[in-house]
Image (cartoon, rainbow, N blue to C red; front, side):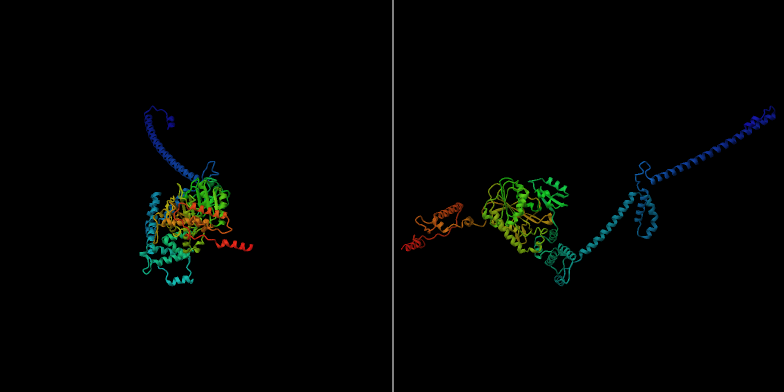
Length: 640
């Protein structure tokens, strides 16, 4: 158009003017068309730009997603990528967990699955993860509730069923050996009998008595645990049936290994640190003991360590701590007697509490047992102990009113230490238990006679046994309360069960509740009994003064049996005019020795009433004895 303008020549004519108008019109129309074309071109270019920008954006998004996936799959891309391990794909794990949960949520009914599968899938896609977990928890609770209801119905059905005792024919077959009953069946029968006895009125057989159930239970327990039936029967008189079973089971299991720290040479924390270095696993024994350590595991023998050989600790059961703690001797000038000392565990503990002061007399019946006592005393560094071997039934006469405190750990049947000596199950009978009770009464009487009740802390003794039988514990202490002027004190032990105040038809003194009993199934200790006794005076209830004086006289005169009592009595009780003929050959020294012995006895018995003496002889005229004159006559005949 510009070229046409340039080529067009000016025309001054009218035609030229017309031509110019037409050219202008054409130029304007062409410009409008060009503007339209330019507008359309601009809009098309804008659309193309938008499409290109959209496509570039989408391409960039796709590229970014692909880059993220590649980076996720590839892991770390920094300089540490060579040694860093990428984590697992979280998306795949989440998808797999969703698939597993969706599979668990499918119901067993085919119709519900067919109709509601699409809806469940849509709901699973819509709900959150926490809602899905709550649904799973609800379903688990429902299943647990259904199982609990089924178990409850089953237990009701089992408990309402009546247990039938074996018939006489079946018992005869078991006794003859024609039918062997396995231990599992015996244990099941024991549990069934215990269940019946717990609710005897509703679960017993109509034609069966309680005695029949107890008899069968006794026989089964004796067979399973290897006891004599009379021992099991004796335990059933002390405990209820279920507690008896617990006692028998606990008696078969070993007790924890316990050591006592010797504070004369070391402290408990130092000893524990030394043993821990050797690989020993240990714990403090209990709150009531400051020196006990419980060994749970050890790679080395506890009785052969350098600490043991140097006397830093003593192997001792936890129950045997209790009598010494109850006696509680104090440092000073106390004179303590341990009547049954071997092998020296309690004796060394007494010396430890007394800090090697005072005097401890360690007595035991058998001298060969005292060898272990002496060895332990030297190993532990004890310096205030004197050992001896006397019969404890004579110590009341030998050492009367000599000791401020006495410990009597009496010999017993050992029914509390069956875990250490299983032979008790078949070697001890009820008669043996009764014999032990008689011996213990004699020992306890002599121990009280040897006590000196004078002094602030004097006249205290502790009686203990390693048995749980009533005949060796409550019966003995109740007997002493009647025979001597004593009373029971609190043991000072804040654990343990109180002693019996009644047993079957027997009724004991109410103060026996101050004694303490320890059981293996309750305290995880050896069976033990501890009683603390205080002597009030030398009086003996039930005897008058005359009988008491006769007893004292008989005790004091046993040491002077060699005296010529006939001559002594005639010299002391005869008239002043009466003369006693002495045989020829007796020297004046013997006569004076007899008089000295008599004077000594009189000093001992001075102040005591009604001294028993031989009956007085009738006075007779002094005549020459035939025995005295006979040698003279022989001498005269020889001279003739």
